Amino acid sequence: MAALCLRAVAGHAADLKLDSRPRRVTVFPNGALVERTGTIQLSAGQHLVLIPDLPASADESSLRLSAAGPAGTKLFGVQVKSTYSPEEANLKRRELEGQIRALADRLEDLSDRMMARTAEIDLLKAMGGRAADRAGGVGGDFTAAATAAGRRLTVLLGENRKDERAKRPVADQMAALQAEVGQLGEGARMHTAAEADLELAAAGEVAFTLSYQVPNASWSPLYDLHLEGTGAQSTVAIGFGAQVRQASGEDWNDVNVTLSTVRPAAGGAIPDPTNWWLDMYQPQPVYKSVSRKGGVRAAAPAARAMQLQDVGGMEESVPESMPVEVQMATTVRSEFATNFIVARAASIPSGEAGRRVSVAEAKHPATVAVVVVPRLAQSAFVEAEVQYTADTPLMPGPANIFRGSDLVATTVLPGIAPGETVRLGFGTDQNIKVDRKPFTRQAGDGGWFTKSSRKYKWVTTIRNFHEAARTVEVREQLPRSRRTEIVVTPGEMSPSPLTDDPERPGLVRWNLAIPSRGEGKATFAYAVKFPDGWQVSGLE
Image: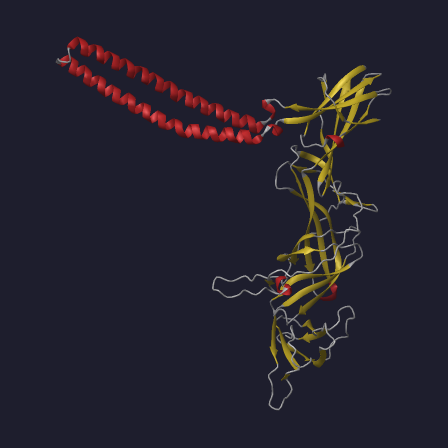
């Protein structure tokens, strides 16, 4: 086995051409490493073997060549040079140039006909002048001849005008095609070739492996999340796919694909932490967006922006089907990167929108809950706490959310490590209705609003329209103060809330067991005290 880096030098024509094509491709988030192979039968002695039709986008500094042949085979050097493919090799250019030639022929035919008519017109005019001189401008024969000649001239001039008008759209179309050919540029015809200089001690077959990097390629993760079941016996099937795109200038037909998380172009230099400066803060002006009716359009709360679209209830039946074995990619993990070797060869043409390839799919145990956050949304959300049990780490990426076979929402899946537990939203439950109202002040109740205090009380009513009972988690949040002078005191909480979560201070939670066609209520109250004369923001 011999391996050499390619170096760019002026080379001479090779006497043999190697028929090779891409066999393996490692796709990075910002490029790809292409490996093409080929074999050739050679006699004993010295040979120059040309490996043609490499893409013009190939990074010459990344080109590497290895060869394996009969014992004693020597590889002396490798040259890199740019070549221009013949006209036949560029199908698009050939097609356009063929259309241009056909239009040029059409213009030439029209011009020839017009020239023939022009010659006849000139002849008729000359004959008419001579006849007038002989006849002295009088006589019946002359009048008849002049009339006939005039009619013929009218016809010829009319046909020429028609052909002149017919030439205009042909010329315009020809100019457009010529512009399209110009847009292809020389790069579309240019190819990089590698030329290997080797010597064989004995005749035999030589196998070449050539690798090079191309910049115009990438891959990104895509996910499908399928929730099955309700309660603690649920599962979430996570389908991990990848969208692979490439515009390298060569088609990858039936290649073995590896997806890598490595970014070869990313800088390896350590960032300098000393460039940190403090300066006086100068607030920027805030511009409000005004609606067409003239009112100020308030920004939607972040929680509302994250709401998932409404969907149907959770009892919808899932069609039965035979289980299909999923061919998963082989995951190769190292300390600094992860590679996914796709199980089946794929074809990824250059310049298309991209192809999706499957990486992994597995079911993971999940606990499903219906969650209500009444202060922020009058909807019930379906949430699954998923224990991710696979060995394949998941990168952040867009995900389609399914309940059963129904697509209910789209979201962005966070990065998930093997063994991690994550909470994922699966849309809203239309069969759970939520109504949150402020408590009506009763006669004799005092101290609700003073100059230095506020008291709030809310009652949330939840109705279950499912055919079975549902447990609904209600989440309320006590406001938190940034100033010691502003004191928040919890009020009536009914029924008794769950134990406080130390990681989420101020969060008040209830689990309400609501029968079918029944309802449950949660009462939430708090008081806020602050110094007289203060204007406190965020009270409600």
